[in-house]
Image (cartoon, rainbow, N blue to C red):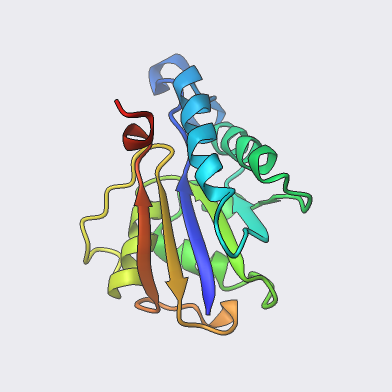
Length: 169
């Protein structure tokens, strides 16, 4: 069995304020929400042993908060393909994770993150109406022995975390 945590980047500055979407940084609320969600990730068992992320500024900043909270020594794998990726692309990226990794954290963007969760849990990227807000987190167990076996329908969704509920507002 493998474990997958899916983390949507935290809240970013409005698109109208940045000419290039890729360069939007986190807001101050985004920084706080990333920290709150990261504190939950730090308690996961088994712990995260591989992090793969989009290289966009907001996902880089989210990953920085996560790695600090986890005291993560291994570097983050920056995967260009995660930015603007659909579910099939994300599934392919995950299929390339080294077999010995037990718990992977992927940090990316919607709608791909929502579609990935749906596809793994329900067999199709469009079957469930998953809503993953900014700084939202999902954790799944996957009925696989190696990451190259990942496929639609192999997962069970165990946790969905919305930062709004953590901060109580």
